[in-house]
Amino acid sequence: LRSKNMLKNHALAMSIADVGWRTFLGMLAYKAELYHRQFLTVDPKNTTQACHECGFVMGTAGTEKLTLADREWTCPKCHAHHDRDHNAAQNILTKGIIKLA
Image (cartoon, rainbow, N blue to C red; front, side, top):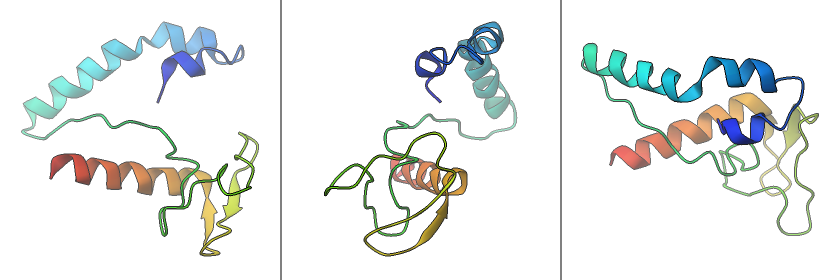
């Protein structure tokens, strides 16, 4: 999550700023170490815009980027239907696995 971008949303800004994302990440790192787990961060770039099946990125090849209102979409290349959040989670998992290798 990019807190800087999320702070631009006036409905969320106060809550996000109060949480203190740096502190939260520090707590996650501490708990991971405590339970002998690995904690790493990945670049969130295109995690919601890229198809996790074929890698096509919305906003390229004459397609429009997804907006926040687009909760489901179909990849124009492989025709896979995606729930935006599930697709992003799959992309984040893949990026994490690649980063560990």
